[in-house]
Length: 253
Ligand code: SAH
Image 1: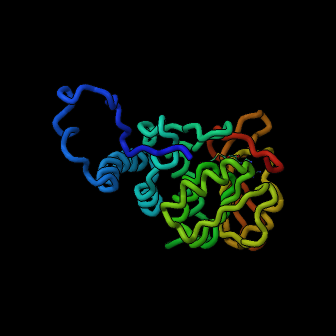
Image 2: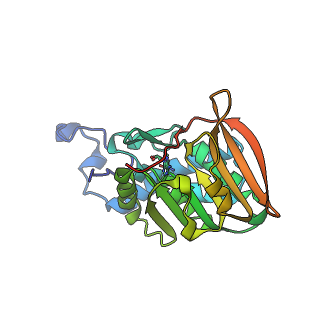
Image 3: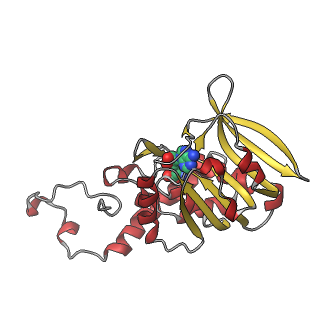
């Protein structure tokens, strides 16, 4: 397991002459968890302000983005970029989405007819990756089922999430193209990987009044965000802005 440093990562080399270090560095070490929490909280609050300025208006989403320590999900070398509006590599060729995209997609999920007001019911996430989005979802949904096809990332997400003790997050290893029938029906299904179409299993497993938010490859080869709503058993689809997600792949590895 790679060690995760505190936030922000220390940039001064450990071997720097003691006399040239700032006085604070020579003081007895502060209790690490409190220091980490305080430092990252301010940076996260700025990220959330930026999200609001960019148009994320749902208070539930902003609160969830403020609550989850994104820096705990990225590699130690990238900790200082954790709150920038950028996607970051999480290993095995996959990426954690930009905070803006995570917030936007969850806001869309919460905009479903069946979700007005409080928390969403059960949610299925396709593509656990490092587990960050699952942690954010855990603040806005009653139960989160998150499925990942790469064993290495599934295990990494388990490690990343352990310290958060999120009792309502259920990590699954498998091919999310088939959804996860045992947890159905879902109030929301959110995909972090883009395929050619929304699999029929997802729409089958969607609850009445529920919504799917997923990237999908358009006929021109570019991906766009798609929402699918189920109302009185009927499906309606809307195509939104262009996005860049890793491909949705079948099978496990
Ligand atoms: N939500 C993630 C983003 C991960 S990137 C996070 O917060 O980190 C998308 C993930 O989707 C990758 O890990 C990729 O392996 C996974 N993926 C792609 N196709 C999949 C499928 N059919 N089933 C499950 N996971 C899939």
